[in-house]
Length: 288
Image 1: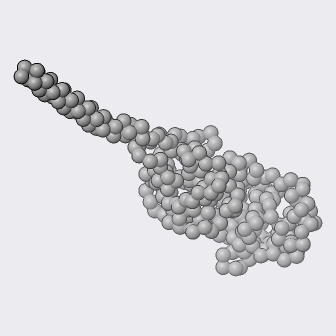
Image 2 (image 1 turned 60 degrees about the vertical axis):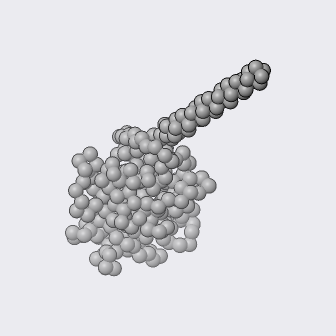
């Protein structure tokens, strides 16, 4: 009888110890489950840097921290919008070697400033500075944060990005990656002999009329491959006139937007050198 009592007591003790072990294990598991979300949240903290590129020598960095998934190209553009007060409205699609970034028609880059109140830190007095700032800042922000090799710019649903007036280049082909303003300014006046000879040998006279020419007073005439002409002051940075062009075998005709020329024309020799010009048009009058 005593033996049965002892065995019964031992069985009860074993059951109690087993129950305590299960409760302890369950408690540890619950604590572990509660701790995991906190650890996961800490691990998902991201840090990106917004780049405001005023020039090659003047680049400001603005770190941002957030939790969750890595920001997309559109979200990074939205961060630039909030930072600068300018509308970086884009859509982006991934390619094998980077991103195609399409600027929306209502973005500030395409639509302009209008009468918006600009932030003091991001205030622009001329169209060119604004455009280069927006293109450079987004390009740098995306390449650095998304580890993108190339950024291809388009506009308004996939059209080639084009500006009526922009020094030193106003057309950005959709199949050539954007290179940054420093690159374009450095190559503004470069026309190699091979390139020039190739243009002259082509039967299309228009090809020989593309480039930059300097007048005796330092004024610059630019005729672009987009069928547009611009004139710049002697500082080579301040545009003061522009319009569409028409070509024939002898000359290029500098037109106003309404199709009138007012005598604006330029003649070139067989090597593509500017040899004579009539009046160069401006929106305020005529300039010889």
